[in-house]
Length: 66
Image (tube, rainbow, N blue to C red; front, side, top):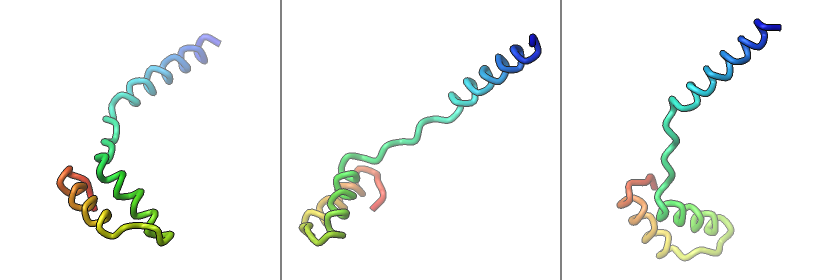
């Protein structure tokens, strides 16, 4: 019983240390999220192409991917 408790404690400590090792993934810039939403609208035929062009430029300017 003592070994099981010790093993569980060691396992939880190792998982806690491992979870903090990875930095969180960076979020996309706000302009890119707006662009993706507008592109989803285009898939259903209800978007403005000028808005897509403008948001694409803003997304690239903010460091996102097109």
